[in-house]
Image (cartoon, rainbow, N blue to C red; front, side):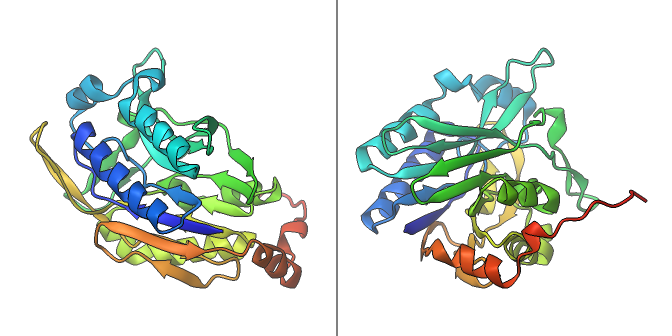
Length: 278
């Protein structure tokens, strides 16, 4: 099965981001991809709360979701929209950071709301409070497809190994980790964490990423930088493909039988033991 990781540079302009994503998905389909994955924040990346409130729509009204569903149907592909900011309907008006798995008929097979919020002080000048604008999800999601079970996560979820283990034990053979990973933490932790999740679970890990500097021309924000390096990791932990730092598409051919082979060698998913908490 050929997968394609879309690497893009989203801004605070949803229309421009849709054009960029759609063009890259076309490139992926032209290259024979059957499963195409876009990164976190495919529809918009903005630090301006007022701008977010004005442009983040309910799921049924989101132009990016509607257009990419049509594109998946026209191309007959499976499409993971890494995440979109959508209205959650919550009383506190926070949004959801939601990942969508789209089937070849354009229907939404699964939705996953990012559970772990990126509330961190990377440095004196790099401070993030994702939970101020987005409410966390509370449900792990594993979807069945013709090519295997897909466990859905988003970005900061990568640091929580128990989530990925639970997905693998529920039947996931592929873990998706769409991200807008910070350029500082990405350089230090991105590859090693992705490889660890693959090794621990015996899953393929597919991680499409945002890359470069993200300007905010509409909201006049300061922008931010992301690490890039979309990665595909094999169940034994090898890096199969690295997207570097340029906008583009990275292809990888997956043999799902490798999952069973890796797990047969190290069957740690079946070796859990109960223990007293410290």
